[in-house]
Amino acid sequence: MSPLFINFAYIVSGALFILGLKMLSSPATARRGNLLSAVGMFVAVVVTMMAQGLDYKWIILGMVIGTVVGVVAAIKVEMTSMPEMVALFNGFGGISSLLLAWAEYHQHPEMSGFIALVAFLSTFIGGVTFTGSMVAFGKLSGKITQKAVIFKGQHIINAAILAVALGAAALFCMNPASGFGYTLFIVIVLVALGFGVTSTIPIGGADMPVVISLLNSYSGLAACAAGFVISNTILIVAGALVGASGIILTKIMCKAMNRSLSNVLFSGFGTTTAAAGGGDGPQGEVRPATAEDVYYILEAADSVVFVPGYGLAVAQAQHVVKELGDLLEANDTEVSYAIHPVAGRMPGHMNVLLAEANVPYDQLVEMDDINPRMDTVDVCVVIGANDVVNPAALDDESSPIYGMPIIETHRANTVIVLKRSMNPGFAGIQNALFFAENARMYFGDAKASIQDLVAEFKGD
Image (cartoon, rainbow, N blue to C red; front, side, top):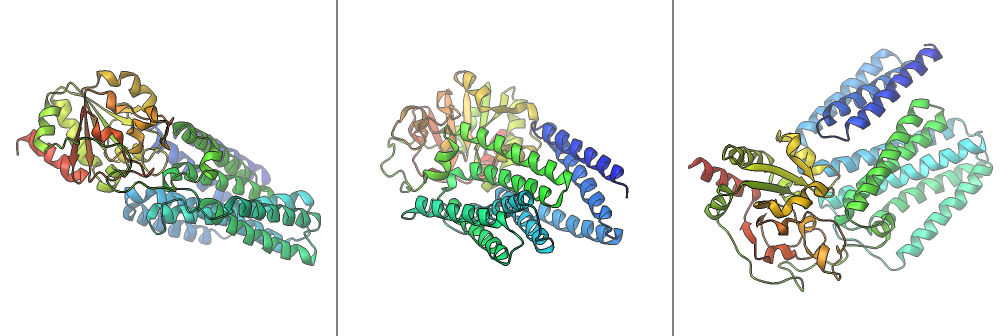
């Protein structure tokens, strides 16, 4: 296979990656963007393997195995588990870059200082990404505590680990081919794996959407460095695109939480959790509502805004919410869905969830667009969202979430809050919205509760 053809194929792959990323910025084109990116990766992988002389039978075998794994995962994994799967994907990308750099160093230890440097970067960032993603997976899946795990002197320990890594890297880059060089490389691997754990475990569950975005960026940077190690152009391009887009998304997520990245990584936010029922948080009279009460409120409304949160994903209520929205529209009610950037457990979680239920894209409204007209909304239906609608972010300077932009549902004429109980959200603080005069609490499983409303509208 000629170098000209290989480079042309890589250019095509790179163009498909860029077009795919562009399309992923809109819910209306995200599926096509994902498909274009997948086609680009398919072309890149096949061309690279054929260029290395791999028999096409092995390429086909790899495609079949990957397809089977992908299809099974797509069918079996619940929407509530998508954040954990994304964390696993990030982790696998990181460990792949680490192993690639390790294999290249093992085969060609007489590398230049520059190649030794990028091998270190690929190994270190890849190792941090792998173990950090495994910790994120454990927190998101509930296999380890979702609280921030703070230990005495953690910042000093992390700084010492980083210093050891940099010191080992400096010595390694001076003479990677020496016998001591291989020992230093092993030290770098172990330190990277340890640093991934110690740097991620102190971050609370409320910050996991930001952490996932950051780890995604890490996996791209590790892949980019690995591309330099093996002199593969398309791996450099793909890694750079993933790294840059991940950093941009991380910045967007931090802005949505009104926090800096350093605050997310080092503040230990989420270390305290309010007791169930509110603890020392806001108190007042809760106004429960029945399905019949909520039906009469919705039936008389001219405009209804649904605000989805993680509880919607847990209850798998997206399809019945869409059915209720259709019934409201048939009743001449204007229906829309307000999406907070950090609602759920990963960026875009609610968009994916509602897209699965075929909610029209033009009904999905971003936080900055819905807030200016919230005073004109008749009814806001909050389904499983908590911290992203908490008025304390606006008016309680002592609150951990003070300053965080929220969907200002409390300004609507009426707010219906669907929750299983009065337990606080991921931030561990009670929600002042529950006690607002215009709020009604509709307790129960979100899916069952909305099914009762659908039955009321149908007259069953």
